[in-house]
Length: 205
Image 1 (cartoon, one colour):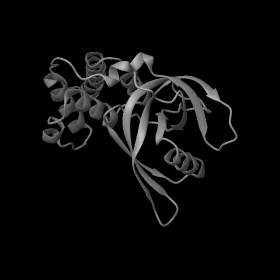
Image 2 (cartoon, helix red, strand yellow; image 1 turned 90 degrees about the vertical axis):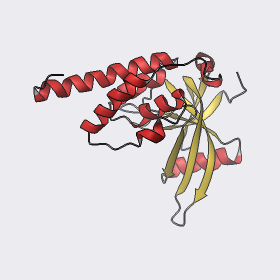
Image 3 (tube, helix red, strand yellow; image 1 turned 180 degrees about the vertical axis):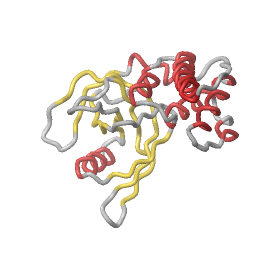
């Protein structure tokens, strides 16, 4: 396990997950997160992303550590960044501070698989076929040719990020340890939505 910070600033955002080996562009305009980004750029460029829950200040207990790979300030005070995903983490406890943003103690041990090279071959054909049907029924366009050029892990992580599914389902995908487990979870989620559509429209597959 590489040496990643055990205490990190965290950006909680509802409905947004991202994974290692993917990129997340962010438009920062709230003062607390402008402070966060300015601080980490001066330090080590590491920050965490987690999903916030629907009520109160609660967050999910698994997120992803990212490193700022692009940083631009706009004339109106906003900051535009690109965050490159490195490794997932478990949230241990929140650290009290006098800052506008939140910081947490985290642990990466459960997800050391994120730092290893993808081994073996995994057949994603069935999942991609189902995803094409799902996206089409949702009226969403995706460049499937370009997606299929990606390595399997990046391909499945990208689908997990952009799929039109519930926050809780996105979190299940984030917490799935291995690639095979992630494929199975995503396939089950898509099956649920496809069957729901079939039932509501009274069509038979």
